[in-house]
Length: 293
Image (tube, rainbow, N blue to C red; front, side, top):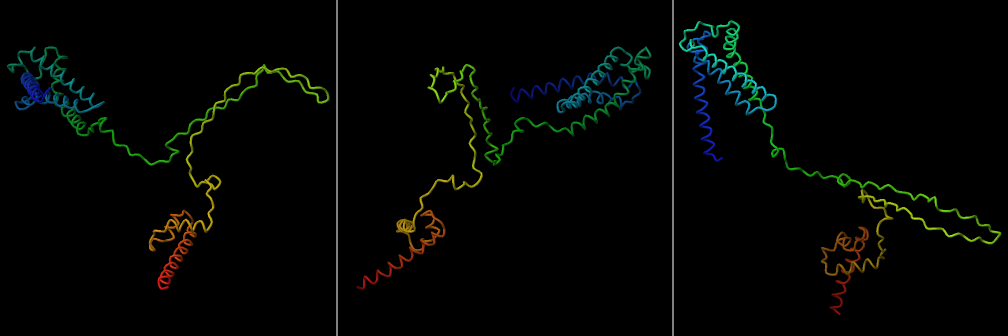
């Protein structure tokens, strides 16, 4: 339904409820006059009864669970009370012309007492139940919907042992000896070897392979498990460093850079640096001498 249709539906509902209230207002005003209310009180009496019905109806649309059940009970109780008083107003014509005696709504005394008690207790009940409903509506917290409950999940950095569950080990099945396998006769070393009877092959049971989950290294790898590297001599390291740093400048010729390029220790990197710088210094010294010669 579009917005215009909803507005027309609500307007029609308000009109129907307003006319129904006007009809009920006439009957409840005469009942209030009959139980001793003055003109102003009799005029406000229908608002007290039917107004609480409207308040309870709104509360049922807002509240949930037990509070909603309570609002429905209040709505049903005051709807029934208003129906009874309107019914009595239709049965007693004297109420229309205000010719009935005060406090006389029925000829039978028990019925009259019950009707007077009902008519006089409705305003007090409106104060109590109306205040309770308003308090429940004001303190009501709407339940968040499913879309509001869903929040972006933050991925927590966890260890691999927490993210991967270990694969359960398959039970190892041992092959049981077959009862049909005959025992071999004992061989006497002093006499000739007896003929060994042929043994029929018996089917063996398959043994389930034990599968272990791959483990993640948590510390330093022991030296025995590392990939062995060839030990290079000092001359081999110097030759490799000389080849790698041939086009390096003097500023770039540092022990750390040489260590990373040759992949050796810091001490050997400093030794190579000093050797390479000495070679370059010697080469620069020999250059001018050869040019002078």
